[in-house]
Image 1 (cartoon, rainbow, N blue to C red):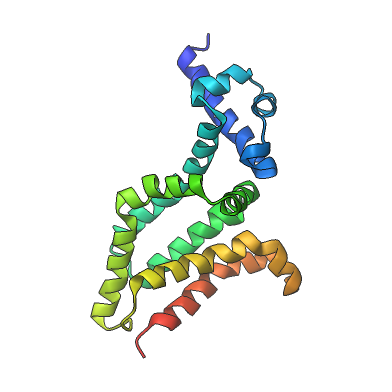
Image 2: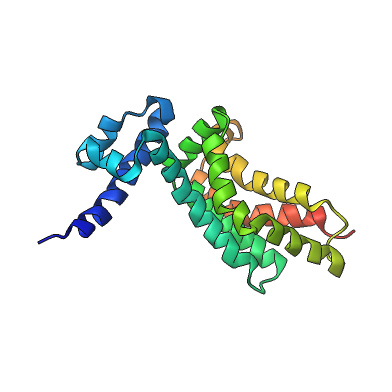
Length: 206
């Protein structure tokens, strides 16, 4: 006999999986709860039981991905790994999360087009509140103090690094067409190493 707690444990991931696909295809406004319920193979009432509203479900879909990124970055910046190694691992993580998950890429585009309120909430609660930006700035500042990096505004450096990672992953179909990138999968796997090389040569001491 399946216990009630076991049913809840099985149901929640099914809802999130179906919701991720629906929000990617239709956005928050266009996705319908009854369609998500059918895709998950459950009664619509179960969605409201677990998440209370479509908006809460949408926030949880975004949170689940941002939390993976936040947890990874938090562990990474707490290690003794050198800056280049840390940046490479971070770039790999962006590539793995966004490069292989076409649904979440589409959700990010929907979010950016609508003002990013839900994404901002996820970043603040799952990244900013952990002190991750401050830890990353500290790692860059240590590079400046050691003489390896030139004097830079670490805020600009962080934004630039994130942008270098995200921009291609989000806009890949357009860039692949314009730049005639025929082997997109191979090109995507080359990106982390290329990004770190370009980024570090831009901020290294001259």
